[in-house]
Image (cartoon, rainbow, N blue to C red; front, side, top):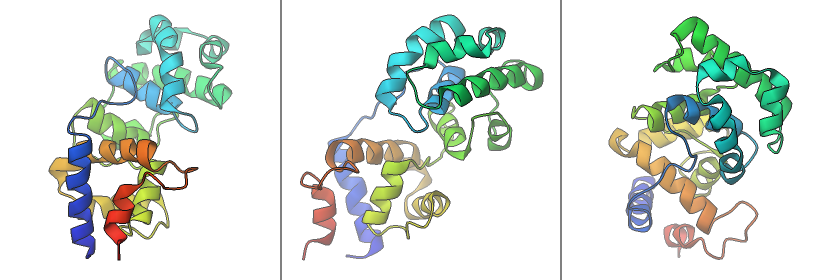
Length: 206
């Protein structure tokens, strides 16, 4: 099976499994989405979704987040890993949104990635899920599975993102990256033995 054929089969099977895909992180607008994605680094979406309702009730806008002290933000997110750094980043992120963008989340990678705690992956999620621009955010599931499926070399996430964008049409990026994440969680978790991972078996069956 060629790389092109594998990519087509993956897309077809994932569409059958996940014809509709919810956005895993609960949010109400671009700001709360960006905060949730920034919090999700090195922790699970489930844990983030447990913490954010209380956080957003108090600081669901840049204006309200900026008014809080770092220790107050940390107290609200203390169950999440790296809470010290994340609290510092969230406060400064909110302040810069007010200083530079009138409290409105910008719609360019350059401006997003200039905010504390917002790397390329977070910016890509905000661009795709928050604003609907075509993007292919690569998380650990996508990086691992695309390497496993021999669609990328596995060197780094930058290369994985570039390869994904070259393989699949722009029109499916926003949905497909979520479908791969859901598949990874449900059928091929990193610590699993791959028993449920029927897709990899289909791709490389003798």
